[in-house]
Length: 142
Image 1 (spheres, rainbow, N blue to C red):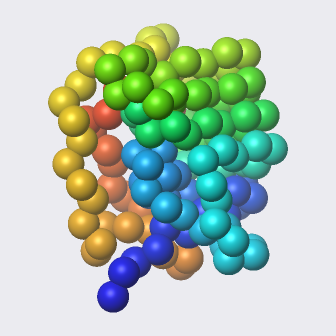
Image 2: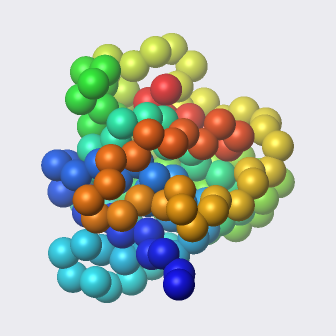
């Protein structure tokens, strides 16, 4: 049985694991409609319990977003973050504002290719994520 990545994007549910999976290029669906997320997300808020990582080459983009890290009192708003289609190029962010975060966040860095996620580690609608992706290039909210 295949486990789906379910994104809420409502700022109330923890979207950490599903958003990281989507940013790695995996498919995801919206919890409220069951529709496919597609390659771009715009106008959504995500509650997160740990860092998310944007990996170059996945073709994903976040636009006019809000990332909420309530445990750390951090809010990241954008602007745009684009992964691009070339895995040899870093993601590009414009108009991203980080309030309450550490210096150096949102800055691309070289990292090894991420290992594929196992089905038992994916988020479900009622699960709180405690897993972090430690091997991806653009951290937001460490």
